[in-house]
View 1 (tube, helix red, strand yellow):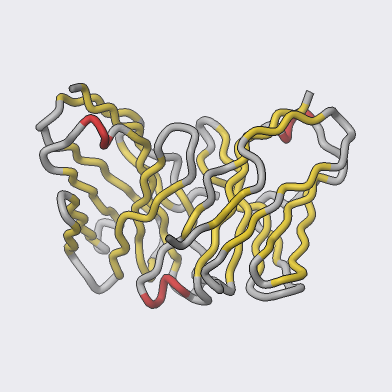
View 2: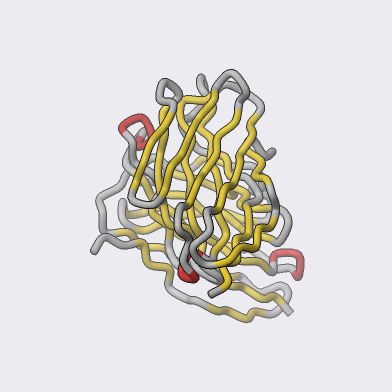
Length: 116
Length: 112
C-alpha cells in the first residue's frame, strides 16, 4: 500500500527549541507539501517542493524552513518554536502536475505538535 | 487565502439518510477535489472532477460541478456511521500552479 509516513504522531516541544518534522513517501512522487491545520482555518500551505533541493514558499512560511535532500524525504524545520506554532502538521505528496492527470494528494497521518 | 468554502459547516444525520455538502469558489478552476478526514488523521482523496465535467460517481459518492455558479456538491447516499468525518473541497485555480487550495471543511456526523 502506497504511503506517506510522518515520523511522529504527537510531539511536545519547548519554546525556542529547534524542531524537525520528517516526512517520507514511497511513491516516487515529485511534489511534496507541508500544511498546518488549525480549527476554523482549514489547511494552510507552508512550503512545497517540486524536486530535490527545490523549495517554494506557500501561504504561511514565516518561522519555518524546509529541506529536501532526497526525493522521498521532505523535512519541515521550526527554527525556534513558539506557542503559536502549536498545530496539526500534515505532509502530502503527488505526482508532478498530478491533478492534471486526475491524481489527488496522498497525505500522511499528521503530527500534532504542542509547543509549551 | 481560501478558494473553496464548504457549506454547511456542520451536518448531523441518521444512518441511511443522504448527506449533501456544498463547495463554492471564487475564480475559474482546472479541477475540484473532495477529501475526507477522520478525526485526528490525515486527509484521504475521494474524487476529482475536471472543469469540463458536470457529474462524477464513485461508489456511494456523487459529485456535481456547476462552473457557471462556481459551485460543487458532494452527495453521500445511504450514509453509514463510518462516514462520520470532515469533508474538504480543494480547488485548483486555472492559470495557476496546479496546487489545490483547501476550504475549511464540513463536519459530518452520522448517528447509528
